[in-house]
Image 1 (cartoon, rainbow, N blue to C red):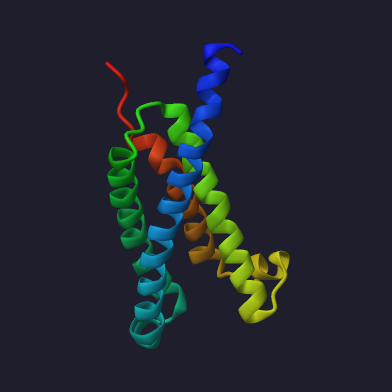
Image 2: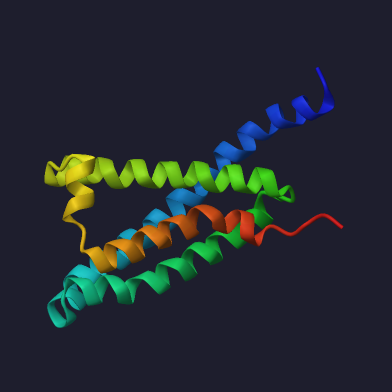
Length: 142
């Protein structure tokens, strides 16, 4: 087995562990922010405004968590960081769609259609940023 192939194979557990930790931490923060948004911001400002106010804080939380976990897991390879971020993104999308189905009975298509066009588009961009942040924060080897 070539060294390159062996190093890819050994990166799989690292990618999986990072993805689960990153997803879980950011999902927990998002859950807490979501409770605050629904209880206080939505009644005061409306659904769209509340979601748009929450998004920068979620991106900041994702950045802080990604940076901390990249250091914690000692990820220095940009490919590994990208794979881990995209794996976490897949977990986030699965959790989001699973929650929509379990709690609201919505299919994935119905869930996407139910989103506000403005805040839903901003949310989609934030989710993409979430997936790319580990790749963006990893430092190149010198």
